[in-house]
Image (cartoon, rainbow, N blue to C red):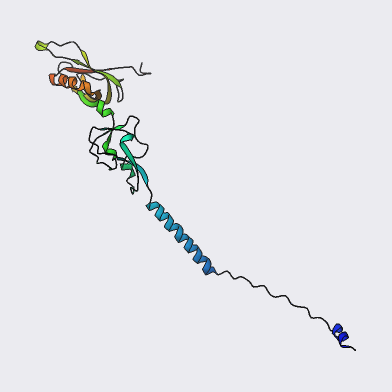
Length: 224
């Protein structure tokens, strides 16, 4: 038998496939990655919280009490206030008519809310009046009233009632149950907001002992 024939008759041996390498997931590696990611997130959150900034106003120039201020007199500052943001004049909180400085503010200083006064204080102020009689039941805080005064003349005579302060705003009413001499009725004390131009006249009437009264400037709906 020839050599080539023997080779043909020899059975062929099958080649076994190479086994695949299995990837072993290391739990320690996973935990390490999770801890690193958590640390990064925590640090970023801490830095972000520490760098919380708010836009507030500062004085462009030195301001003195009584100065009328609007947005053109201020500059914006982005600052970290660490929880004190409610103590300063914040962006967008300037009234349409501006405001009045109530205390000195240096140039570049943040504007404290305590230094921002209403412009109403320039035109009006409040006075406490002792009335000679009771107050109408329709008068309450916020009501518009006219303050009338009647001068006490010599020899027991009284003058003609006149309006001392028209369109005053009632702040509060304090009823006084003390009997008025000779009248037998109760009196009241009221706090009213009046124009500054009327203050001198009212103070003069109070000093002269004039009889004061308030009359509603209008009757509210539903009071009839």
